[in-house]
Length: 147
Image (cartoon, rainbow, N blue to C red; front, side, top):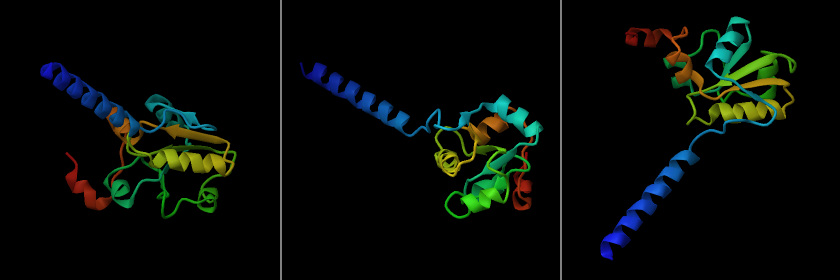
């Protein structure tokens, strides 16, 4: 009986841990925005669509999608700052550090709330971009770390 209780307790603990792990994932969709994958992001990049990187300075400096505009979520991202880069009718892509990063989620939600009409949410973000082998840009102090 003790073995059964111990096994049940271990199983329940494992279930709770796995449920908790999924709670840290960013949402797959955001109302008012279009979720895009890596291939769609690259096609938009090739069309000259504005990419906005709302990550922290250190992440931005370590690597980013070329030509992206850096509007850090808690320091620079505002309706006014975004309007300096695009009109409310322009397509915009927000990205961050992948599916466990909530930064682009919040930035996307803000842009939708401000009335931007063509907001794209690149949920898989920068890690996915790199995994496809697409071009990456880095700040000068980080170029010595390139392979």
